[in-house]
Image 1: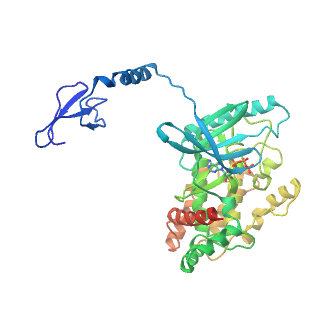
Image 2: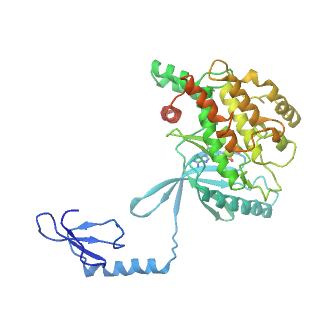
Image 3: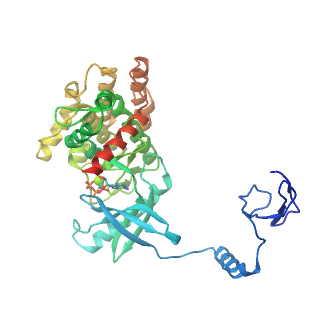
Length: 397
Ligand SMILES: Nc1ncnc2c1ncn2[C@@H]1O[C@H](COP(=O)(O)OP(=O)(O)OP(=O)(O)O)[C@@H](O)[C@H]1O
Ligand SMILES: [Mg+2]
């Protein structure tokens, strides 16, 4: 910095401008630690003293409390556990921050004490997840109680969940919006009409699954099972990044809940049979999601009873060929990858999310194969652009 002169080690520095004219004052909070400096035209004034005293007392007290106001601006979704709202947290000087709040409904509980007990467990798990800070995992901000109703405060994810993205009308709306050459590109690289619902390009689906595996790896390493991996609980942001959301069924491996929750079509067979859910059950659920993404149909559609569903899950590994699109990438590798995610016996699955992602015959191997065949793409970028377009079409409706 031209003309800078450090007077001493104290809180004040004097700086002359390049022509040696009037000194500017610089506020230095931490001398000699490359602080951020503020340039002003006036020297500190005594009239600022009361405010400075307030600042000092706040800093010295080492504790803060304030009241926040939230406006629930839009219903983002509702499901088995309650309602999720987009909300605006209001701060000072007109600052507002979009956040999401999940309000847990007491509907499915017999009485208040069982609600409170489950909420206590949610709070503990939410606290653990908040510390993980993984890019592909929901950011948890707070867990609060208003009138004994519990709420999870979390980041608002500016994107769409896979359940919405797997909707035929959604894709039709996009076709109406984009040019024919862009539509051709989207169909070739990302998503196209499938037998029952839109069908992802395998490379694109595996890119999403890799990010989910990365989040699951972090969760599992911290001793937490997600417990409800399904399209509605995976969001894709405008950046193209995937985020696992909805921690309402998550639990610590060493503290499994008495009352279990799951979504039968995506639950591992052992979970449907009432056995323990483990990290490997999350892998099976993610496997079912992948199969649905690449085949354009839910492999368990039409199964009405638990027994039918369990049997279909036991049969699926032998019927995979009918679900894997041929002619794109290494079909055998992809089939084997799916099989090792959904094997009926958890011991025959990948040992963990890391192995499924990065070890031999895992998701990364499949992508490497696409690179060798020049069939790979900058998936996150491609997905991001497609999500932007899809969200515009979605919001227009
Ligand atoms: N943090 C968030 N940011 C943006 N949208 C969100 C967020 N959390 C949830 N949503 C939206 O709300 C929907 C419902 O949320 P969530 O899955 O947490 O509720 P739920 O009651 O558990 O639903 P379900 O029983 O169907 O799983 C999600 O599918 C997603 O579309
Ligand atoms: Mg959900």
